Length: 106
Image (cartoon, rainbow, N blue to C red; front, side, top):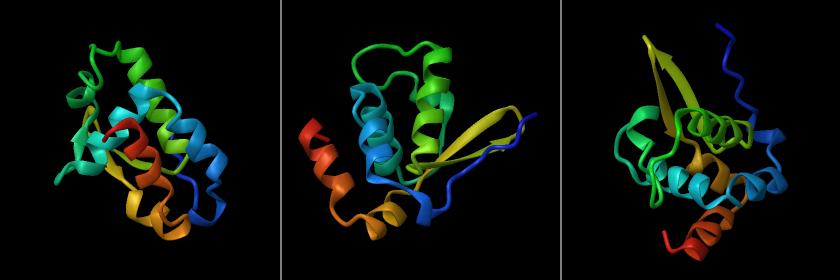
């Protein structure tokens, strides 16, 4: 298996965050992860937005969110679990994430 790469907080850019959250489905997925009290499994988020997201598209959405630094993913057995890095990102770019998510109505 390939290792999961997470960008360091210092290397995050607002452009990557804006790109990652420009897709309504990705924004819905991230909003659900960020609002969750616990870690979310990938399969639990396949119903984000208004339709079921195919597994291949869901994997791509997670990859974009991870590369933008918005989530941290961890393999646990055959599952992939996702954590929000929203608080860390908000510390680096205050107000950016809440502004974007509120524009979507989350």
